[in-house]
Length: 599
Image 1 (cartoon, rainbow, N blue to C red):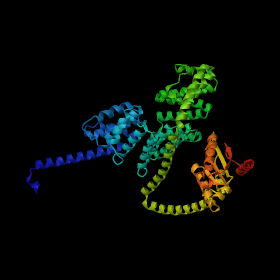
Image 2: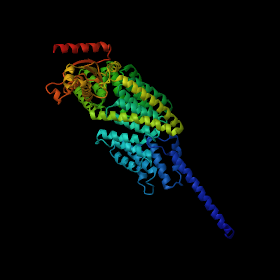
Image 3: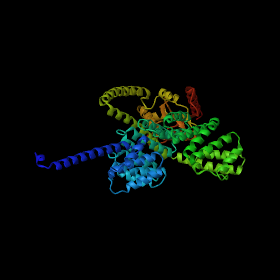
């Protein structure tokens, strides 16, 4: 054997060297395990209880440069989640400036993204360059959480010059990419970003729905205060869209979750949301009772914005109680009583309305007039922004796509959990779907007029009878069109073409109406059209356009060169849920008959 010819001292040295190497390998393996434990996805916070262990390991002299870098990158995320943005930024910028590190590693991509996040929290435009760099350092396959977070940051905060539809399309593509394989945390992050976009469009109801989806997904994976971060956004959006009952239910949920989390910031947000709810619902007695707790919570986090909220709500209570001395003291406290408005509230219609009410209560007509002008200008600005049809249409389009993708996500989760169960489920679903389609076709055939292929009278009336009450300042509008010269048209076109004449008239109506309108054949010579949730003026104009198109149905036909369709129309408008529909339709038909006799 080889060892038999070597000095014993050399053999001992060799064995000691192997032992040292083995120990170093084991130690490195232990450090790498710690690094994996300390790292959290870019959209989540690490377990705060691990921070002392991280600090202790960083004090070791046996770390390699890359190990120390990875642990410091993880430390940056700890600091960010603690709200210590200044120290996090200093640490992260120092470590990424090093030369002896692996710039293809997860730690490096994460550190670059974290710098972008800190700049984001500070609303510093430099965030965009770091988000862009983090996106380039990652991909859906490599460091996917960093790629997702950076992509969403770029779309949400760095695409203001981009068309809204394009921004929404990019957001949709991110959701589509992760719909089958994304974790609950990733999907929660994406839905939260979609909520932010909806909120920027003024679509608070849609934003709240996305926040709540993100919250439910996040509860599966998030720890600590992260369980509450999205829920508070949902509560604010629910209150902004007038869904006060649902908002109060979610505030109660927030309070329950916060019992075990109980940080100064989460306590403040709870008190803030509660006072916000009471102010929105004009429950000033309860608002007054929450003010001491709100002040204590604001003091605990030393928040200047929170103190502005507290003073506003305190002054609201004073105004409602008729304490004008307190109201004047509030105006004095904001330094300038000449219609001064804190910068944080300059676009807040609730505050602008309160500002106007204060000056009116104090009898200062000149300042009230200025305050009214400020309120009116901001209200008009918001109205124009929300009426941007392209934005609303894009939002609605994205909403439909998201709904479709959610069903795909559920199917993907089932496939991952148990392939055999999915196959069995698919068989059951296909069987049920086939039965459903056959039944649907059968019912559809019964609902359709065989000649015109429009809804028959019974089906059209049944659908109108089920319409809910229209929204505020909207209406349900019904029109009946009667073709008074249908027999003359049929005679001149040829008696064998009677069905063709009716089909052409029906086609004209279909071409001029929308997919969600209720359109049907009401009688031999009559057609009915119902519009839901529409402004009355718009409805009347729409019906006139339909009648004009109807009268021009056979333009260009030689047989009818000297005359066309002659139609009579009767209109009914309701601003509430329709009752006694059959009586209303009878009166409309009678009205058409009287109109025909006069002619």
